[in-house]
Length: 234
Image 1: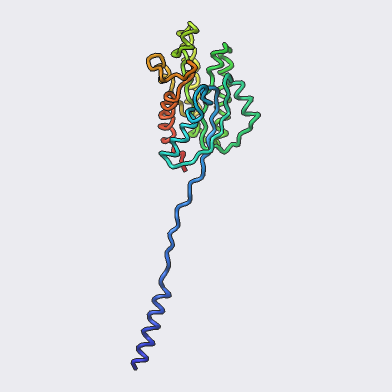
Image 2: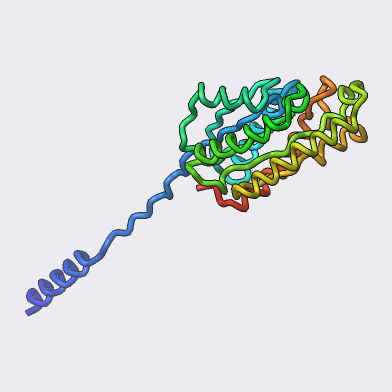
């Protein structure tokens, strides 16, 4: 009888063991790299500042730090480019239309080179439409950045027509803002930051014209506010 009870006990324990399930916990998958395309001119490539000082690099560094997100950056920009130059470069480089977000800062060279304003009125909407297409067609992931006002720099002061410069920059920015609103894209005003350049010389790079690392850092803070509203990070 004792032997029979022992057998039953062993069978019961074996049955209990067989019904137990092993729960394995898996680490969450690492987030995929985001793809960021920066379109523009010297203000985007960071003329006269260090590589890590330009605003696209500062932006991806801040995103990595604050959102734990890796960013794959592509820059299509060059000193002196007008809107027409940028259109040509985009067509030549043919970036893939799978960008997670795109920034567009262009127009100062149209103004500086005395191009007819109608050229900007024609080119800028086309550039913005292209930027949306490249951002997977998602207009919420495109960010227009206003044109800095170089009248508030030593270079601009030497030009001697600072009121005209500021007035024309305002005209360009007003059109960019209106176009962005019509197309449902965020418009980020950083011009007011650059208009502190005479009072706060640390905002101007060593060439006396372009924004400094400190100025770009302020740009990035403004851009990040908009990016975080859009839930771009995966």
